[in-house]
Length: 561
Figure 1: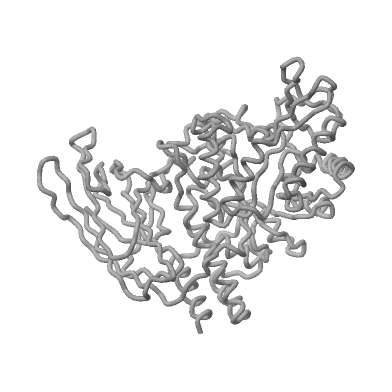
Figure 2: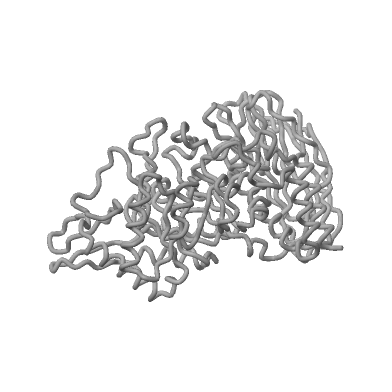
């Protein structure tokens, strides 16, 4: 059995040309941080790996079982990592499991992710972790077949306790999909439990924004009704219920919305509210619009007729205005309107006039409305920027238009790199917050936290011609009804640590801090990063673990000197 102790950012896969993992002998960890590394085992056979003590037999008794034993004076946790298949039939390790045993086929390594939380109080020193692998034959004594030690060096330096305070992270949430994937009642007790778990997960990353769905299916399910390569139901539904009384007036029920806001805010996500479904609503082929609705946006708002006890759809401008006014009044009543933005996603070039008309209509009803828009096309960006309060630009638009002072950049189904796809080098994910620092956007937006297709327990592929595998989520559903993190999430957090250190370092020596970033990036001018809107220059964004280690050490040296 071959065994490796390697870095946290190694991506095990079934690629024939996979890089051999680097051996890790010493792990350096700042206080108020989380040290992490991986164990990898491989012998070319199908094996069961277990992390706990109880007897655990595979169904096929011909499969060998190995038990991992970890001894240390440090507090730590160990997790098996599962693989997912990408659109080129390669399997990549990504999903951090809660189960303590897993069977790995002979075409892949068995990866274990180990974390060491290090608080402010721990003494800076060197600590040893003893790592052993035992064969666990059925009714016979175990035998140690592999043994190593790892030195963990706890540094004197302590990271800020609120590491993500200055990093503006916004990952859009999909609450309807959350309930649907786990098969629970929308807005029932189990859905609310999952929402709270999602809020806690996002809060740990430093999430700043709450996604509010203010109309029915604003993204038209990302065309899941028409795209059939892999089964998916991606419709997101309004958090606000509408009733129409016998006089024809509408009344809104904000119970679900308030529950959602309360869950997110109690987790510490309270800086911004992104209200979707009022502006830039997607038009989709073969999807019907509301009949007779004379309005620039194809807004879908469902109501219950209280007298007839049947559902219908708002289809007049006056009804829409009543609805908008009631929602805004409620948001003002609960004290969150000042932090609310009406958000639109990637205006299309053939609908720019309709977009301006929509803004004008909303301003008539809501004079103090603020608009936040994501842009992926430079022509749309330049024409609509004067109408927008909060600019968010694609990676390419950010690189090419630094004068617009975008507040965040985003990655989605492009660029090819750096990105957060399943097949992306994990260091690309870590690099994103550093790129936010360098482009002075100070934040990152990502469109999907949990936009899972139907079989997400084992397969996250969907519309792979347009959405590379992994684009739809950063977390995974589990069999037990919980959310599971990913190696990509872990590296995003590590990059947010880098961002915080950059902010500290520039207070000590701004020029030297800039030099360190240029050394890491290799090319300092963002306008030279891209070949076109989708592809970066081939030589860029291929940073190595060695480069990141040197970068982190140089930052720490600059801070503590």
